Length: 429
Image (tube, rainbow, N blue to C red):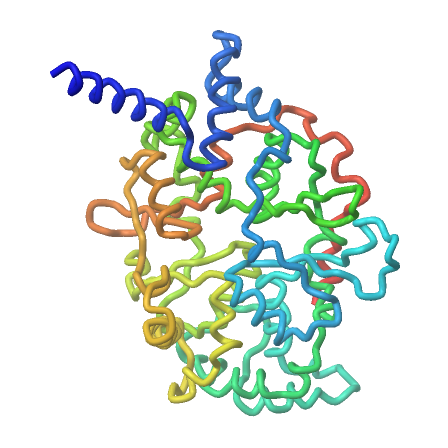
């Protein structure tokens, strides 16, 4: 009996040690926040406490991204190769190294920007437009080929009657052309958002990083090593959400995470403001809207406009470029046909994928914690909010959640943005 009691006591001690020992680097980071949380002034609000905690932690404490996700692409890489690299590594973007930069170049001269699927979409839309009637130069071979199968032009609304604008062989013509194969990443530099890009130093705070990922709509933030003049880490919105999921059970997280979505003002984007595409519209219309409205994804809705049947994200442009043959039998690539073709393709080649598993939805009564766990486990970037009848009520993105975790103090960034400027809109492809 005594030995059994001793064993139970030892097991209890082991269990306590296991519970007290975080299983991941993200959980250990959460414990740092917990320690700081406990010593904050009691009169501070929970948000003010979190701001103070995150301001005290350097971004260097954030766990390093998997090596497969810290990828650099050379400026003389072809666009086709860049698309393949982004797709294979399941990343949205990658920094572009200037192959002509001297060996002793600073990081700001070593890189020319970040290539991302959003920029590739800009390039595709540009190629899908016919030459201007005022142009004195004949269209390229690609434009001629494209114009045989599409009337796509302008950034106006394309209806179902214009579905031929994205004919089934449009992307086969695009990706088989010498023009596409010979286009280099540096040739689409006009689509890069920054010149070269916003980056953090290791000494910058966690709060700075969270604000860039939320208020400044950055999906990822490179962390540079000034001594080595190179990128040391890349922090993404998804990795922050994963960190939050690993912090479940900690006091600071639970005080915020147990609230209902409606209590913290989510969704920010309600039904009337959600950018959407109808299932019978051309798939390029979805990408046009994403570019015009500067959003990362949009829902596909049925004829009623309030029932969500699917989702197209900016990264899904990869399926138009890496497997154009899957649309060959379609007279037109509507949003609905795009979903059908890609789901069939992924079932054969990947088996499981967020694209295959269908829509993920929630209601306003779900808690922040429940939503974070769902986003992290499904590896998705947004959830659509529906009412009890399943009608669309809004959308919640990773950025929305992070924006409700912290707030930006007045004048916080000061001259932070000096030296790394956004490219003017008219410089884009």
